[in-house]
Amino acid sequence: MDDAILVADNLNAGYGSLVIQHSLNFSIKKGEVFVIMGGSGCGKSTLLRHLIGLQAPLAGRVLFKGEDFWLRDADERANLQQHFGVLYQNGALWGGMTLRDNICLPLSTWRPELNKADLDELAAIKLALVGLSGCDELYPSELSGGMRKRAALARALALDPEVLFFDEPSAGLDPLSSLALDELILQLRDSLCATIILVTHELPSIYAVADTCLFLDNQTHTQIALGPVAQLLESGPEVVQRFLRRGDAVTHEVTK
Ligand SMILES: Nc1ncnc2c1ncn2[C@@H]1O[C@H](COP(=O)(O)OP(=O)(O)OP(=O)(O)O)[C@@H](O)[C@H]1O
Image 1 (tube, rainbow, N blue to C red):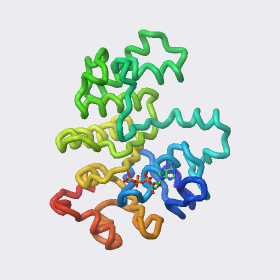
Image 2 (image 1 turned 180 degrees about the horizontal axis):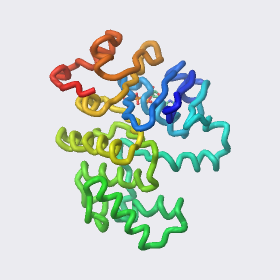
Image 3 (image 1 turned 135 degrees about the horizontal axis):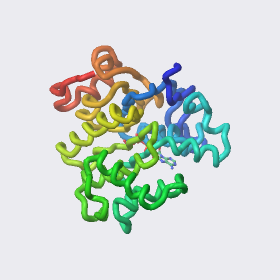
Image 4 (image 1 turned 135 degrees about the vertical axis):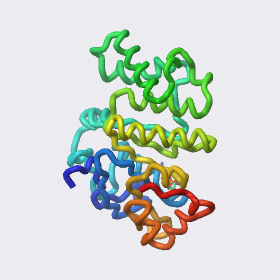
């Protein structure tokens, strides 16, 4: 458990009295790509919100580096969340701001000691990390869908997060842009030693990037599989094997 960065300990996920998933138990290792999968509406995004610390567990705990988020007050929680970068499905950037300003905003909020030249330089570095060197002055509306995702990722990287959360990052992307995003995710894991937590339906992405997969079941409302893709393909529950082999999935190479 020593290398665990995030742990769900008997977590019940949901809203108010509505438990969407119960008794979740898993630990996410530092530096791994952890994929949350399952059928539509099973609670993947809900679980993500609990892991990010945006929603309190209905029961159980979420631990970040061994600490229970919800034993801290709101200010302390916000400080802990600085270690997290989040890329939401729609990649929401502020449309009225250039990419540079989009990235500088979280930086200037949390690093008030930085001057304008430092901020601009950091923004340029983050854009370079996602393959958007020289795009500092562009507005989101001037970018393609794939570029917008990358720009949103650059903003999520602004504060050098230890954990990056992605909620269906490939949504709306063509297969080539989606593949490029998968490659970027692996590059970030390797170059920044970031831990990546990814919600996705996309089998090519799952096969390409996942170190560990968690499968949330729609019927039993709990996790029914946890492990590397190859292991789940070989010995996972039937419903998980079907999920992983649907369509032309069996032709994808399992790299893990
Ligand atoms: N704010 C909310 N209040 C109450 N119920 C909610 C709320 N947000 C989502 N839900 C319900 O929680 C369940 C799980 O939703 P969630 O978005 O987490 O599933 P998902 O697995 O991410 O779905 P999808 O793959 O379709 O994006 C759904 O039944 C949804 O209607």
